Amino acid sequence: MIRFGRLAVAGGALAVCLGAAAPARADDLAAFLVKPAEDALASRRFGVAVSLWRGIVAIRGDGSEAMWKLADAWTLAGEFEAAAEELTRFAHATADEARRAEALSQIAELEKRPKGFAGKVFEVVPADKEAKEAFRRGRILFRAKKYADAAALYRAGVEMAPDVAGNVRELASAYEKLGRAADAQPFFLRYLRLRPFGKNADGVRAKLDKAGLLGRLSVVSSFACGEVWVNRQVLGRPLPLQNLPVAPGAYRILCFNERFHFARYLNVAVGKGESARAAFDWAILENKLVPWGRIVMENPDRASEMNDIGVWDEIGVPVPDDKRALRVVMRAGDGTRRKELLLQLEAGKRIPLTW
Image: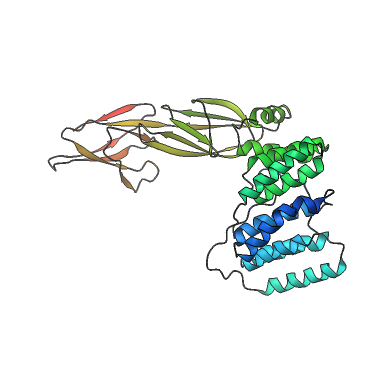
């Protein structure tokens, strides 16, 4: 079962209770989401329906009738365990004893059902359009200093599309305005993980760094990367990147160089108060074979695998983590020559291959 975390933040618990009393005008705030949510259910787009009803619940509260619609979406998708979890939250939040009893009865019924019948893994689908609309409406309320209402809309946006970073950042700002600094912090951290180079990142970074909440990330490469991506965001400046303050968590980093046909990902974990380094160690092979020849080379990551590395004049190859020599087989295009050797790659070196 694949599910988005409910306002979850990697690296720490979150002191936000969606079951708390909803702000004033909560039903009006959620009204723009109701029709799309009902349409998604009616058209059996359950992945989208889950996201949309989550947004409505974020505004109206765990004890609202919207929670039953959310449970319906999970149930119709064959995700009975998830439906039972939502109804459990409803039972804990509602003051209506009759509805609580009904929820508990439904939970017991769901627990008897076989798990899943759709024949494929269910995926929640982000409701990006509605999340962006929640952001737009939230900004209007924030400017009007209606911070509780703005927070409700931002919270809904995070539920509907967890990767729409604007809602994450503005939810943190709204909590700050409400005097809820402890609730704001995890969302500032989450924003910084999502958009480490966003236009608002430096301000957020300075705030969190001053509080001692960040780690440090360095990224280096043997040769220039045409592009560097960090958590799916372009770095926008050349390497090296030295001791950048970042939110603790996991980072996936891409170095791409079109000229040398080189693309490589590195995964790095940064701890609070700790430093981490990602190093793209690679060499460039130069095809100097005359007559022309094709090069087949041992995969630097998998010793048992040989890869045809193409017919390029120059190609970037990562240095194996264990520094082992790699098997290379060269064959002339006309069949007149064949050569095999073990090649020791050195980071930052150009290596000509000849007969």
